[in-house]
Length: 305
Image (cartoon, rainbow, N blue to C red; front, side, top):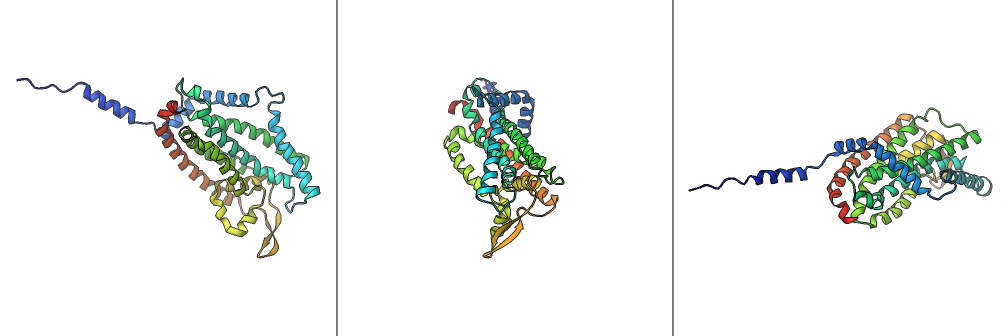
């Protein structure tokens, strides 16, 4: 009588299942992105070249956009419709430029995997690099536009708030962390639900008007207090405004009477740092969640693109 020998293949099948189910965590994914940083730089350059392909002016278009905003809003709100906000063009651009970075990075990042279908289906690399490349290209445009704003400050002889100026770097890093988390998440979801990229256009439009860019934060604060800080872009935008535009009194309606209040909170750097810190914590948590969702969905990217 013979006894059946154990199937020698069974253990290997079990280990294969364990190997397939084991997905790299967020830290491993960050390491992979760092290991492929040269590819990230190459894709950023590709994004910039494609954007201005067959364009005679090239990167000059990135400079013309904020310059046109400056000229138009300076003329309109100085000579035709005088605004209650002094140097309104500078006030507007100091909040509009970070929003443009957020909007361009998130919009490009959301469609990055679908838009690079031929690359995704042919070779392996950390797919998170694609939305990050879109953000990198948007960051280059932001740098050019920020240079225009700096030139405008010199032309108007308008001094920024020197003690708050270092906060610009922290606000920018916070913004990049936030948009990276959202872009990685939406890029993965958009592969399976293409309506996301169309819905995002409406969300970004609503997000723009929910953020104190064309109106002072004091106007919102008078109505709902500091609840508007639940919008993570608000903390970033008012920090940029405080550092670049400064802080001036604006006239708003309070209890039916015109009242002069500081346009942005007249508080210390620590208050702004605290608010940025809250956004950083939120963004890190969202980034971890985005990596987890991305890992769940990326195996079937090629079949669904």
